[in-house]
Length: 495
Image (tube, rainbow, N blue to C red):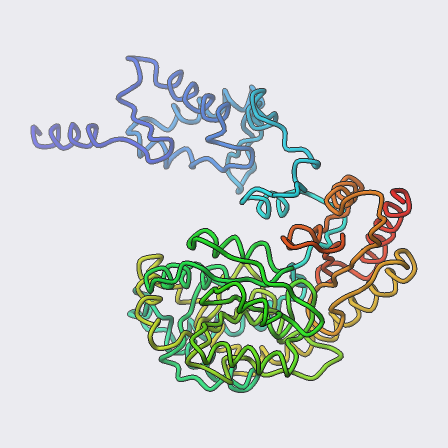
């Protein structure tokens, strides 16, 4: 009998719930129901229990707290009468009240209006803000056709992977990436980009953004703190490098790609390029310019090749990757962000042997490697041919979207010059110099009309005409036409 009392006492000491860290010992004598109702009310009010949250079943919470079920039932009933909770049958008891703190921003919070978004010198978080800003029509570049994600093929591959997965495969993976995906990537690059690489040379990374971050750390460790960049060139890519390095001098781009004479003049030991489809102009690095660049690299320069949009081409033949021509002097980065979805955060990086250990160390101390399951699913899609089939489907869809955008530009922006139409997921427009506003002001006005795009001046530090960078992959052809019509109206109004 004494033993039974001791066990009951021990259970009472241990009674407590992970849910809201509730401990019945905190309740005053005889006031369990009042205490629990007050704690629930506070959690709803301060947002710890937002609308839609399902509460624990009464019997479960009562057992965890070591109280009678009636205490929990009565507390839930009080909040239901106040309009804060509602019973949903088998759906359980859920929060239905929206806390005032969540409905209204604090009075002290600075408003983030549209004009503050498109500044000439945008803040580092500007792309996060732009993605989070709602718009009726999204024409921002870099957004793939997410509606085309091959859900059925992905689910089939995922089921097949899980069926054959051993328990030990769910542990920590190889920091370089799973052998299956590194092998699949090596085969993919050989088939599609002319790159011959051993799977041991492939490092799986969280997209091109992480590839640039890893390279930035590795280059700094090797004594290189300056990487030249194309101008105009990706603001985002430049920002990633500038976070780790001292300088990113701009090098002008013309109709043949980066000007190697200007690259030499900077004295920079390395350069970041998008040679297959230059961002944002869309030009392909010409044959003579390639040979000149490879001579520069052979003399000691290092090329970082971002193979941006290389697979998305419509009206021109493929061009070989620079990595295929001079592997000892080229770091190669690619990803599936535009082919499948950015949310997968999966890409690959090939680097010359002398940088491999430093890059691998940077990856190891960044995250211990990418998640294993998505790697295995992607490897199956690559090796089964599903990814090739998906690419063919995307090319047809993207061509229709591109054609719709060009037709709309001819109608509504007849004085604009279109660049980069032969490939990619975006077009670059340059506008007349006598435009009555800056391109950042034009982008601001467009967003106020519900159309989201990017000003060209964001991506150019050297003198360049005003313009816009317009993505066409994500929207429907009707949305594209309507968005361009809005831009045309705004340009006419400013002239």
